[in-house]
Length: 90
Image (tube, rainbow, N blue to C red; front, side, top):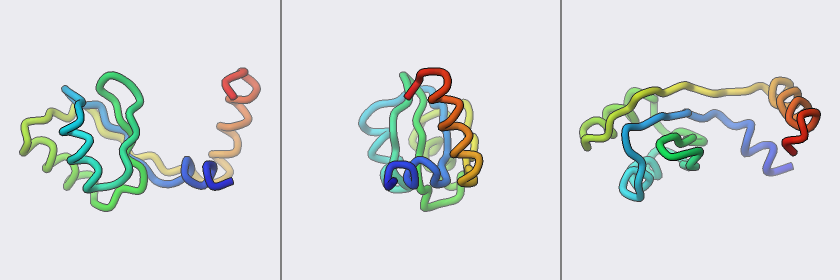
């Protein structure tokens, strides 16, 4: 149940020009980063506004190609889990 609550929390989905340990350390100051791919990361429980996170990254020479806010209601999260289960992804 804790995992479901964690995944349903607000998050920022960020696509960067580069992603390495230094970038993750910067992001840790603003929430809980989780790497999704080569240059994509989700920042759970952001502690700052998205513009603050973008400014910090850009000031350190890290390009931000895309940033999306993600906040799901419990109902939306439940239905996304059902779709994944039906597709055999769980």
